[in-house]
Structure formats: C-alpha cells, structure tokens
Image (cartoon, rainbow, N blue to C red):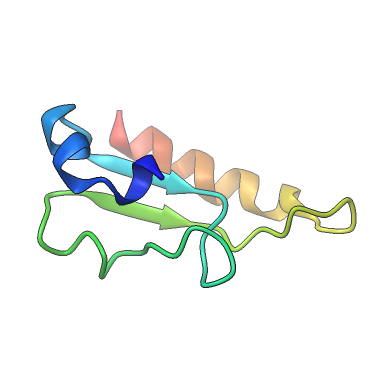
Length: 69
C-alpha cells in the first residue's frame, strides 16, 4: 500500500494525506505512523458499504485539503 511506503512518500514530496480507509480493519495508518515525517494526516474510518454515510465527512475533509493548499 502506497500510504505505508514512507521512502516513496518522502521522495514524492508528500506533505498531506487524506485516508478514507483509516483504522485497523483497513489501511491502518494515522498521525502516529507519520510522526517521524513532516506529513499532516486526516483520516476517516469509512466502511465500504452502501449504508455508510460518508457525506458527514465532506466538509471536514475539504477544510483539511483547503488548508493544505
């Protein structure tokens, strides 16, 4: 998984990560995973299910992205 490949992230100059598959059953990264890097992290523990209401995360995620620009 690219999100866990720290050397690649560093070489690409990645400074911010939005992870919509955050949490142990998915792509288990988080702020602590990137603490040794200069990366800001925003995670959403979204289930891959038609019942999951992801829209509540749109504005917080958009704010994070806007602050990164």
